[in-house]
Image 1 (cartoon, rainbow, N blue to C red):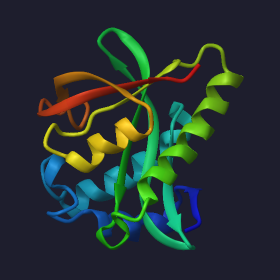
Image 2 (cartoon, one colour; image 1 turned 90 degrees about the horizontal axis):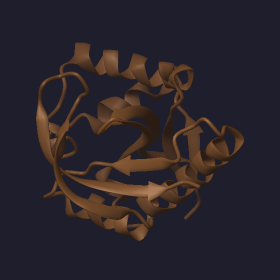
Image 3 (cartoon, rainbow, N blue to C red; image 1 turned 60 degrees about the horizontal axis):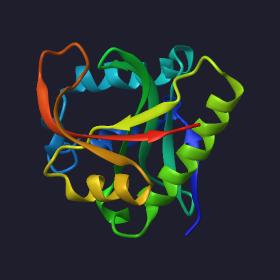
Length: 169
């Protein structure tokens, strides 16, 4: 299967709507209202100006999910954070792993070109999200154990997540 990453654009709002289901969002608090979803889409479009990138994941040319990295503060240090979604019809076919490897390649190039960029990537899947935790291990992350992770940032809502980290340089 050919898996590629495509930078997020206005044309990906429909993909975001397809991701916004009870099943797909069960580990992060459930679906968002249309207004919140549109605000999320706008934030995704602005990510490059903030040192991050949201991508649509394409599998054999079809929109299969999304994957991103962005900068954030974590425990007093600036780090990169990654997150992903793979639509149900593409799950279990290696799409997430291929997208994760592509994201790591792009992010490592970005970090190599910018010595001031954070050199660590974190991912925070819910403790009970077995597929995402397995993906972190498959991609070479190390687990620092469970943590209370605020999602979305500055929302005051905390998830019971695992803190996975990977050195980028």
